[in-house]
Image (cartoon, rainbow, N blue to C red):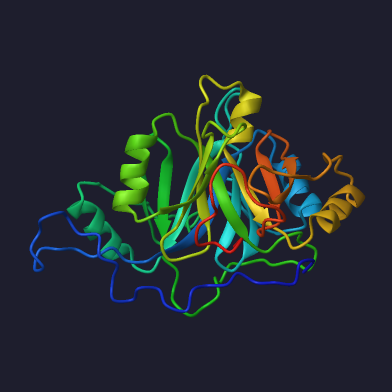
Length: 307
């Protein structure tokens, strides 16, 4: 493992429930939200599975799990996180993001809780072809497909394929376009319990990005605001994921040696070193040092300590 550190899960996961019941409900009627502990996976679409495997398996160095009927691959980041790629991209102008998944400790309780807040979530049909864990599915206010998964507690995922050559062992955030922040905040903040940890923009007087941290874990969802009618290239920039690395210069050296012609690393507006890579279909795979190296623009960074 190149970076030599593992995903750190909180010691306490609100195992008795996190109280986000319906306003005005009696204690007997209240349904508690179970913990949401992090990003589980991001699922992407491609029109060339072999090229995708070369990027995720060789350039990024992840261990690859393959499936057939239908064909798919999973690039394992750690026992709880992976990047899934499916050969279902019907057009080069189509969105490459299929869905984003978060991990919870109880699907049963989460479904009950969401129903108590007027949100309908349906079980994802299980299939020996691709789905390996129980999951719920729904769409957020922007129409993005979301899943919630539950792993057996205290055990590593049985299908994980970890590698000694991977550039990262943690997905730290994922980004999706948000056109209307108000309903997004109501869903992710008021209902799911995500909280703002930082927001900023291309200039100090505007907000283009909002980091919404999962309530019981270190990962975050990044709202990508102020984007209208994006080109296919820009859509791949917006719908992205970020991998944590301890040393951006070392990550740059490694991917360059593996034949990827990378941009020069830079410090972003959030004060963190980052390096943007792109898979064969233009989805941005951002490498990022989780700790800021200089003060972020625009607003303080709350509660993260850079993680």
